[in-house]
Image: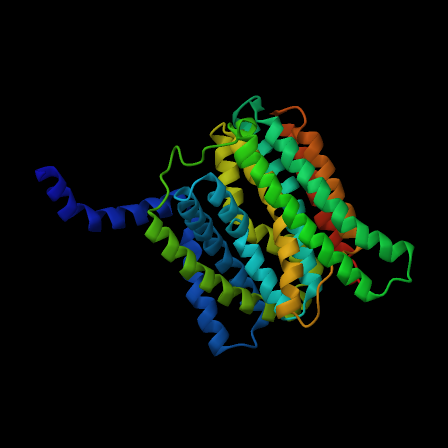
Length: 381
C-alpha cells in the first residue's frame, strides 16, 4: 500500500515528462513539430509566399504523421483485433486521406489521383525495397511470412484491376460518357470496400493463424494509454487538416516555381511525406531483424490505400468535391501501379530477402520518379 501511494504521488509528473523525452528520442522526426505553428502563422502573415508555405507544410506534416501513427496504435491496441483492424484501416493512412480530402474539396483531382497512385507505388517499392536494403546490410539473409505477403499482394492486384478497367474502357471505346465512368467508379468503390472488409474478416477471424507471425510491434514499446492516444489523435488530426489546407492552397504556384507538376508532387512528395512515420517503423524493424513486420507495414498500408482510402475518396467526392471523382487514372499511373504490384509479388514470393532485392525495388521506384519529373503526364479526362 505504501509503495502504491508513494508511486501514485510522485510518478505521474515524472512519468509524463520522461515519456515525452523517451518518445522524442525514439522518433527524432518529432523535433520537426516546431514547423507546425511556424507554417500556420506564416500563412496568416504572408499568404502569398506559396513556395515557402509549400516547403514548410511538407516538413510540418512529417512529425504529425508520426504522432498519428503512434496515436492510432494506442487506440487500436485497446479495442481488440477486429475493431483494431478496422481502426487501422480507417486511421493508418489518415495523413494521406486528410491531404487528399483537402485537394478533393479544392477540385484538384489530378493531385488526389497522383497521391493515391504514388502512395501505392511508394509503399510497395520504396518502403519495401528500403526495408530489404536496410535490413540486408546488417543481416545476411532475412525471412518473413510469405502467406501474409502474398495475401496483401493479391489484394493490391485486385485493386489495380479495378482501377485498370475504367481507364481501359475510356481508351478503347470513346462512346461512354462521363456519367458512365462515374457510375462504374461508384460501383467499383463499393465493391472494393466490401472486399477489404471481407479480407479483414479472413485475416483477423476465420484464418488468423496464417497471419500470426506478421509482427507484434508492441513487444519492445508499450502503446500510449487510451485517453492520451485519443486526445492526441483528435488534436493532431485537426492540425493535419489545417496544414493540409495550406499545402493544397500553395502547391500549384510552388510546383511551378520549383519546376514540378501536381502529378509529381502527389506521386512522389505527398506519398513520401505522408508515409514518413510508417517508413521509419518499417526500416527500424528491418534493422532489428523483424522483416516480417516491415513487409506487413509496407504491403498492408498499400492495400489499405488501394482498397479503402481510394474508394472512400470516390464516395466522399459526391459530397465535398465540385464533381464526383472517378477511378479513371492516366495510363502511366495505371502501368506504374501494375508494375509495382507485380514487383511486390515477385519480391515476396520466396519469403526471404537480401539487400540486393531492395536495390532492385528502389531502382524501379527511381525510374518512375525520374520519368514523372522529366516527362509528367497530362491530366486524365
